[in-house]
Amino acid sequence: MTTATVDLFDLDLFADGPPHHLFRRLRAESPVCFLSEPDGPGYWGVFDYEHVVEVSRHPLQYGSHPNTMIPDPDEGDGGAGELMLNQDPPRHTQLRKLVNRGFTPRQVATLEPRVTRIIDRILDRAAETGRFDLVKDVAVELPLQVIAELVGVPDAERHQVFAWTEQMMSLDDPELGRTTADARAAMAEMFAYADRLAAERAAGDGSDLLSVLLAGEVDGERLSAFDVDLFFMLLMNAGSETTRNLITGGTLALFDHPDERARLQADPTLLPGAVEEMLRWVTPVLHFRRTARQDATLADQSIRAGDKVAIWYVSANRDPAAFADPDRFDVTRSPNEHVAFGAGGPHFCLGAGLARLESRLVLQALLERLPDLRADGPIQRLRSNFLNSIKAMPVTAG
Image (cartoon, rainbow, N blue to C red; front, side, top):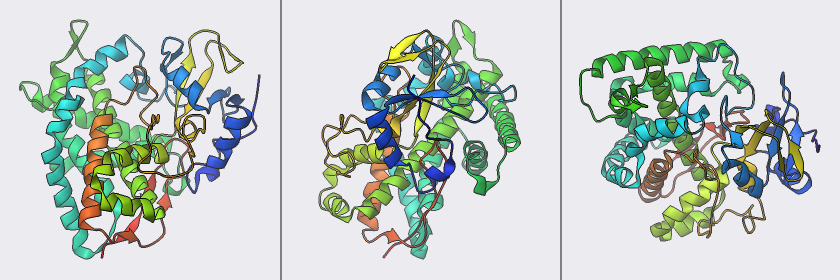
């Protein structure tokens, strides 16, 4: 067994963003190795592109249940182990089919005019003062408004739902002072809210995703109220956090690489490819866990049934075996088979198309409407080994 002494639960390592120097060393010396975890039995870390893809594409060997976070769920997790994200086929496939039609390429394409209108409203407000927080005033607002509309959350209530999301997703950061009890309380409030919305739609035939869930069936049976609550939480969390982090991290990459920004301003047709490079460069979700279903060998390491296996997308996306000059930000990079949305298999991100659309449109609007946008103050990062997230990013336009 190859073990490593690196403690990837030491959040100081992530204070300035992902510790790429450590991932570079792990890929070179021990791309699959056993690491310790606080209050747990330890886990296998997978750091190179080849084996991240291998684990991702074999869900029967490496399953998502009971948890996609490295720590094991406890009895007070609110039933999060039943989330679609934490399920394996066939149940994962059945649950995913219920909402899949809301995220097909054709359906996402129809959203472009609505997303553009939302972006225009957001930037109109943000640009009035000339100085604003790109996170709070733009990157949070866009995906939140879009997913709230798709799910069926009234406009006036979306910020409360987002506050619950933040309370659940930012436990890692000691500066925020949030506890496990806070996260559970937020989950309970979100579930109660979802129950109220569901009751309002119970007799209707709405087209929003919550109505779709209420009308959907798995194996001939309607979803339980608890299943609906979990789905609602997943959609609101995943629908806002990942895109927000891509927008802020991608904009920061353009600030840090002015020549690449100039290329985009000169040729906006490069934007779709630039979004792919931002996804690779930022990697909004740093890792997910799988659990070995049976004994296996991975990169000459003996994995036993029941072992935790964490696939570090952020490391795979800088693997020189998969990307030429991986530490160079290049908006014209091609090919660019990054794993920011997963590495294939049944858990490939359901909302990938929507995230791409939102990010492309808001970046285009920023480049066109605020061509001189620049950082104007210290950037505050979330101290997390799970999300590559920026908490505050003051900018000035003009």
